[in-house]
Image (cartoon, rainbow over all chains, first blue to last red; front, side, top):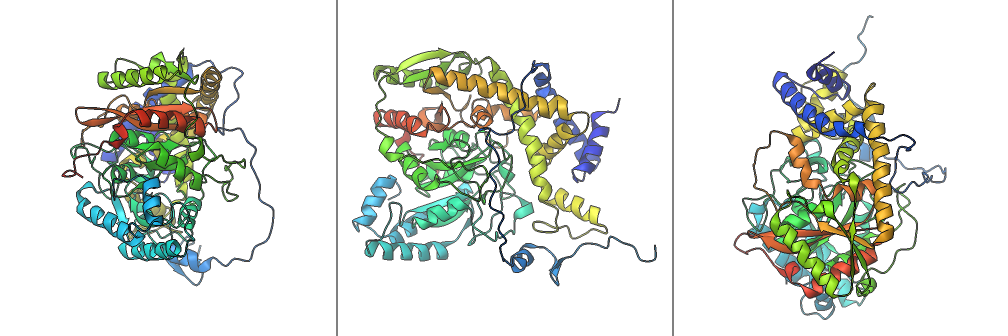
Length: 98
Length: 484
């Protein structure tokens, strides 16, 4: 059975949260305390109860499917940390020659 | 000027007793003098005075609306075009939104004057306002104590008389708990009543925006402006909105007030219990019926809330990747390293704790046992509350089990802090409206009383709370000016 700290390392990778040894220990302790706290939910008999996704149980309202001609590039460029030639810049993802 | 109610301010502005420019300058001066509270993340004096000048023109021309010329502050979770929107996080420390939140637009269209954006727990996660990247907010009643959270900056600013009113958001009590700790009034409206378009998302099935002010009467006037259908918010409910101020004087006689015995547990401070008993006596004398309630699922409110809130936070906060907007690490050789390091540097500890908890309960093997189970328990909680609210008009109880606690108190178990929300989270789980009003003091710190009602019963909640404020003076008590 994997320990919570081991599981949390995998979870952190899924959530893209970096952890070092110190923060891994602290977060494992805290998340462990939270999971102990919410454990009582599992003992509740919920047979026949439908999960509740929305407080008012309303159907998703959809907007009309209308094309709009809005150029947001300048807004997006202003918000992005690195942006050039209408593109977001990221580290190289494809190595040359492979 | 800072002691006047919204109707008094509106009357004075319209009768030229003072101008919006004078009023705005007065509040800006008070904000400057109260910097030690750390209630604001940003203040834009130049823009505020320009808005006040514009409001004065409208007042001169007889084109003013009810709130024209009155200053306000927005919690820094609402997108504004003229100021950054940080959400109390390093992740968004330099974020300038490309559009305004709908409620910001509604209040601006009234001619209100935005003076600044208030401090808050990072991404609205916290009950003490100690989780802000911009430092903790202090409680104006005692600077050694927390103001509550996550809308702690808004609560402290209103309590200290730095603005006549402010906006807040409430996912599990984030309007009501700081309102209780700071001795002001605040309402979390019914889910879907106030638009959340332009409000940074934390837990979308729980989040709701609402006003914070000194009195219930003030709340009613603000809610009239804030509450409107918004086609940009898919959860906005398209039904007619009542005139909230007009409903304030609905008679209390024969109202049925529910009193859950479980709200008076030993861990609830004795002074708070006595304050609730005194309030019940007042309502009883007015002809209200007090009905004892049994809510056996109450012990599940907080655990259910934290599973759902963390799961939704894990999903909502996945958008912060350091690429499109927000903090980006300066040191990454690969795309995955860029995203992970940006999030590691940009998020504080409480946010990471909740993202990890949320990702954990959503992960394969735990999804059904925790997340789906919590959703089922949530439905049972809602059914129990809805059924109780067929027997009574409102459910009364303390907003919090204790008054404000000291700044910097270390808690080894994070769930101990979560219990500060023990009475407030139910309204979010069930989508119900609930408000908090001042109902006494204990050792110099305010006590909050919560009233919770059925969906869209805001007029009834406001009228009952207004009756209380007409017969008590707790909402008029102010922190010592030396501290504020």
